[in-house]
Amino acid sequence: MICKQWSYVNRQIIEKLVYIQIARRFSQQDCSSRWESIVGLEIHAQINAQSKLFSGAGTKFMVPPNSQVAVFDAALPGTLPVLNRRCVEAAICTAFALSCKINKRSFFDRKHYYYADLPTGYQITQNRVPIAVNGKLRFPINITDKIPVQKTVNVKQIQIEQDSGKSLHDEDNRQTLVDLNRAGVGLMEIVTEPNLHNGQEAAAMVRELQLILQTINTCDAKMEEGSFRVDANISVNLPGQPFGTRAEVKNIGSIRNVKNAIDYEIKRQISLLEKGKKVVADTRFFDVKTGKTVSMRIKETNLDYRFMPEPNLPPLVVYDDETIGESENPSNAININDIERAVPELPEAKRLRFQEQYEISWRSAVVLVSEQELAIFFEKVMSTENNLETKRVADWLINEVLTILNQSEVSILECSLSPNDFVDVVQSVSDGVVSADIAKLLLSLKVEGDSRSVNHIIEENNWKQITDRSALEELCREVIQENPEPVKIYRAGNKAAINRLMGIIQKKTGRKIQAQLAITILRELLDKDT
Image 1 (cartoon, rainbow, N blue to C red):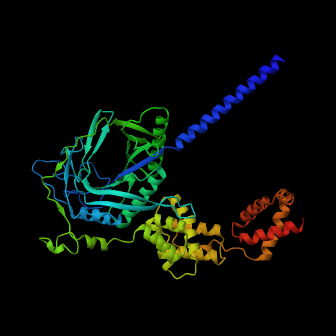
Image 2 (image 1 turned 30 degrees about the horizontal axis):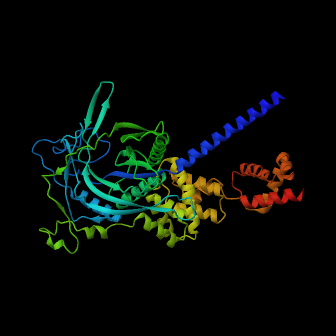
């Protein structure tokens, strides 16, 4: 009796402990879900220009160290900056693409700080009045949804500034080498308002900005080359409360890492606050190997950059159609309306046009436009004389050609697949000349550089589809007789076993059969003999 009572008591204790653990887990989840995360981005985009912002030195990537350095870049005494017109025009073009207000009169400032790769001891930037303010960027978030999911982020400002050089640390010899090739390269710093809330939104916004800059040719936006760098400012707070303490994650190197770094940092800060600890204001970097952000330095106080007006540069003045006549030299003045009129079709407008003009889905339009070269190829295909359905063209490009290109690690413009070759391949499937599997093989051959025509390849390899019903029926009977086990499984009620028989037929024919017709015949024969 005593043993039974103890058993009952122990069971109650165990059940209560389990209940407490479950309740605590749900309580923690509910607590976490109550937090709001706030994300703002600072993006440094290298301007597409042949020379640097204030000197005539080149801007090529992957050249010998210190081979693109003018005397001004090395801060030799007595040298003066000369503003690069192309950099100003690129910043204005970017501002129009992001719906910004252009400041017709902006100023350059000196931002003082000491880095070994900053020879002057200061950076020339725009602190007081930048070239553009108050913009907006609309971008798609989740392309898998049938209903478009889009968000708008406010662009606080765009400012023109010069890049610093690069320090190369040699740990073996305990020395640091300085490469000034990047010193003085023109940058656009694009600062967003804290309108983003997680890594997915931030990554989608960065990708859209990449597309825009590549479309208008103001930045190649190659993150792997350092010409497009992302800093993220992240904080969390309870709803209705002021923003929490902000941590900054510097120099995030890919779009995937933008998402991963921000999401990890949000979780890290929430975890600290739920444990009753404080978030420290610090500068961090994202360790790709561990998937975590790591502190680099603490921001104990606001840095005093001792901003001052740049004494060697006058105010940057631009004009519009109405005021261009006020310039002392109108022929050399920058007319912002001329730049605005030259802005090409932007990604959002192109997506809408693709949907309306070609009657394709929102998802297909997003995928096609997400690769600038793919969108160009798609329009070239549609301009050829063909009877293909637009949906079929889009599906083959997205599902098959993109896969082959990714596997081959080439772009669609780098490979030898032409729009006419693509049309011939897809048309051969539509007309029943070849199977879908053979069509994929044809596309692979053309991407790899096969110079023969599509029809020539089909004829030489005897790849024409077997469509004769009597021949297919004879083949199906033969496969049924030779493979009693899957036949028995099928007739026992497992209809999926027909796929095994189809695989055998595909192998026998080199995937040249009309699959739907073969499945129909197989079902008829299997069900008839049951």
